[in-house]
Image 1 (cartoon, rainbow, N blue to C red):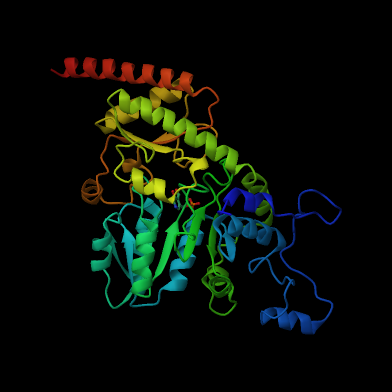
Image 2 (image 1 turned 30 degrees about the horizontal axis):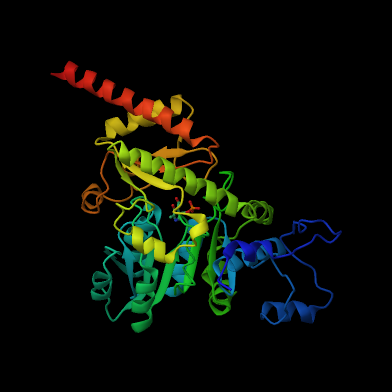
Length: 408
Ligand code: PLP
């Protein structure tokens, strides 16, 4: 039977201690022991099923972690207070002073800033490469390289990583492949394709209600134990722990992820096809014109589609800002960063989520001023949404013509 990530979430059963259909929330930061010896054994990592202190682990966090590990087909997982909490602890765990990282050059701006500005303080250097070119990745490897880092579908340019190809390079050179799968939960299973560690910002599609930040690291039992080690684990020592109340609410939302992803993808594909047919410069992995459309098809679980993220380049920042304001005024979505909400969210990444990337580097990677990133919502009537967006775009062109006339 082929791997079905949503079944793995569905099949997990946790009950509350009174038979509640949801597990009880572990609302405690610390735990008692009947004997001092068990406390000592727990500290040493030798008392299975015992809890010590919630920065280390807690029942609610473990429930959520297990569900996400089941979804990603890894042995286990560790949930964190944010996606950045997951990324930074993984990289600090895998790299020592003097080590080298190869990263995709198009990644979330915060991750880019961490590699570019923060890790050099520890003498960890990063080479940023075009991740779609496997030969460029392999040629960037040095004797100090430890990790290849990428996003399955990149923020904001929606470049698609060839995870199998990257995993083969990582294996050949004894490196770890770390994949941020935030943009494509359920659609792509990086661990099945050979990734060693899979990360999510739970803040986005997985939680789906824009009410919290959160993150997860999915990996082998050995790696997650290392992260949690009380003596030298980056997860334990840097303290990016998720709160139990949040873990329990994210778990409840996770159970509807499969339905939400299908609707995000259906709406995303509908709008991308219409925008492209209207002559707009549209990028969406589900379009045949996307350079990695065929690659995406080889990696995806078809039933979840190509995701809810698309970009449209309207030519200039002024036009992008005006269009977003027009669309927000018509209640078609919100001018906001982040993604995975029930409502469409749009932002101009060059001046927001990717503003950490210097302008010349933005240009080099093809991130232009007029680019709008859309996280398409769960709209029940996407045809109506399209018509209303189209009206906004027509109005935008009229306003632009008027502005040019005035200026001339
Ligand atoms: N990874 C990706 C692809 C993201 O888009 C983001 C945030 O936008 C993050 C990681 C960071 O996650 P968080 O904001 O939950 O720390």
